[in-house]
Image (cartoon, rainbow, N blue to C red; front, side):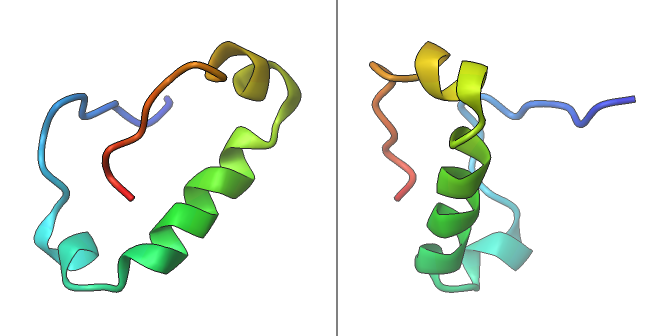
Length: 48
């Protein structure tokens, strides 16, 4: 099964204690996938 999305919730403590930069790079790399990138062009990210 896939991972559950936590829309509108704060990040877990383990992620919050880390630097935001590696997480942003990880998200950016995931969004480079063709259809995801096209679908999320106009989405505003407030996490990074």
